[in-house]
Amino acid sequence: MTLARATSVILAKELRTEFRSRQLLGTTAVFVLIVIVLFSFTFNPTSTESRRFGPGLLWLAFLFAGSLMLQSSFLREQTNDTLAALRLAPIDPFSIIAGKMAANFLFLLLVEVILLPVFAVLYNVAILPVLPQLLLVLVMGTIGLAATGTVFSAVAAQARLRELLLPLLLLPVLAPVLIASTEATIGVLQDPSELSLVWLTFLACFDLIFLTAAWMVGEYLLEE
Amino acid sequence: MVARSSCCAIWFRAERSRVSTPHSTSPHGGALSGRGNGLRIQFNDIEKRYGMRLALRGISLEIAAGECVALVGHNGSGKTTLLKIVAQLTKPSRGTLAFYSAENSVPLEEVKSLVGMVGHNTLLYEEMTAEENLIFFAKLFGLANPAELSRKALQPVGLANRASDLVRTFSRGMRQRLSIARALLASPGLLLFDEAGTGLDPEGQHWLGTTIKHLRDSGCTILMSTHGRNETQEAVTRAIRLEGGRITHDSGAGGNPNEVLVMAAVRESGEEGQQ
Image 1: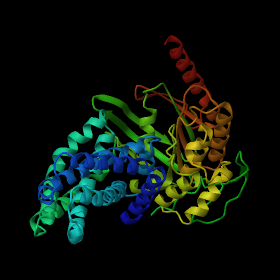
Image 2: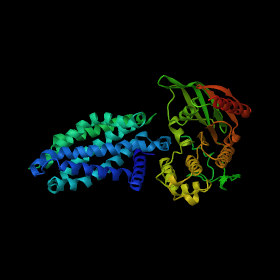
Image 3: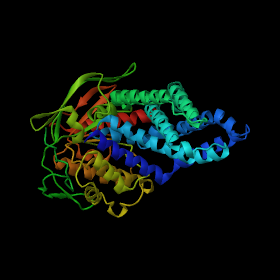
Image 4: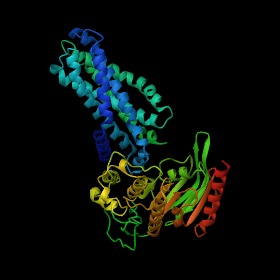
């Protein structure tokens, strides 16, 4: 079975189980909405202020969303040892990781899309004129967030103190993605808007390098 | 490319010839059939180390095609580790493992498509229905007509009328039956049971024992780890006792497994009594 086919089968399973239970999406969306609303009370959201603080707060909320969502990505497979069932199948082990990465990417993106209008209203930021550029930055940053998070979720799931281990492993590695995403978002939201190719290239390189590394070590990530 | 074994193609057959000869029936009425084409396994000096702890110490063993082998021994003796190595869920730290179908060596990368595993854990998704679980795994194994295959697979395990129910609503016995249906989807030549009877009530144990007998009769090679004496052991043709990662007793290919099984059960009950 090809990598793409196996990945799509696992992605479909992830989407089906999540949309059926809505455990992760519901919890995460509510949590990040609360975060964004609470932050909005801490300063006067004029356009100038929001352009200064907004992108950082936005990506902080996405990081919280990622931490919540990614933690359970592989933990869910431990309930009935279903990870073993996936590994028993004659498929490329990376397809298991790739399927979960794709699902996490879509879940995170969905939460971000829900959050954006709320952010725009509460922080008095006009996002409609720069929506395509903003979405491009979101997609690039979210790929990095989902890719690293899924890989470290696989590592942490098999360790003791896994709830503690994932943030410890994830945050240092995610720092470059968060910085690049925040800087690129600042550029997009500033007046006049400017899409920073430097930060976008940085994000693209990070995503590419991390996906390649995950593909190369996929088999070892899942082994007990 | 080694042709996919279909000795365990009981009840239904995926993407292959339809020459099944229903010579026996499953406990739920489905036809059992097989071609006697199980896998032969050769263990050469297998050692498995977890950090400083040795889980298996120099296991050398040959299991013939069609044998039904019980691995017995107390907790931590290495039974599950051995099964995981056979299923390629973990790699041995030392030694080699070879698989043969008839007289042909099976490349390790093709072995997974010939192995089915039933564990103490069901290896099923609780948020999916019985049918969805089977369709999902059929797709992962690259089987043709997954929907039709899953419907046929549910018949003999007596779950056809619960096909659309979520697995989390199932009892332990029903889950285990579904787990067996999942393991048999790809018509494996080798079936691994890792304490599959644990937690089952006497009726469930009886069902499992009868099913294993049918599978053995269909020619499938079966390797199972069990505890104490139970009905799943009635199908056993050979018993191997492990202790501290070593084989201490082996009834042999043509031997009487009951002596080893009884001895293991007596020792286990003795140890439990001391505790």
